[in-house]
Image (tube, rainbow, N blue to C red; front, side, top):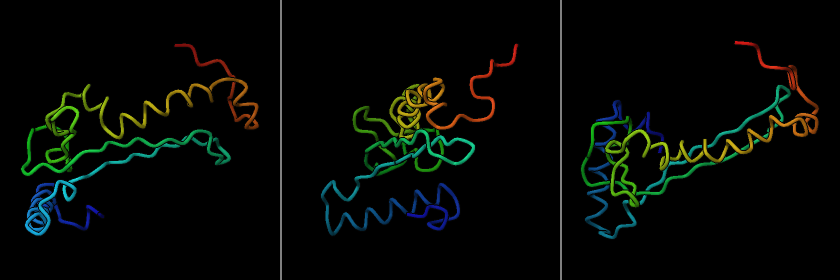
Length: 138
């Protein structure tokens, strides 16, 4: 869904989502109509635009029947992560880093990013300005 067009505020978007899911549940009460996921895609490109690393992080969950928790933003109060039994808004920062789509994408990106800092990666992609240079002294 295109959230910005769904309603004007986070609270209004959540209210509308819950209302529409409740109405859909009257026709099909199965849990599948509350299934949801968030996806985050990250990429690193060289200065010429060649993609060096591309990853995706996904978090599967469901939409809770009511908002829970005070943290986060957007749909965090209603996005329930089953393995923890918590919404994103109820999680600690560390839990959210470990379980969120963004946290998973960053975790997937780091090994490829480390590889791209190796001379063999830079040479294989033609290098880029400053590649292999010593970092500035602090």
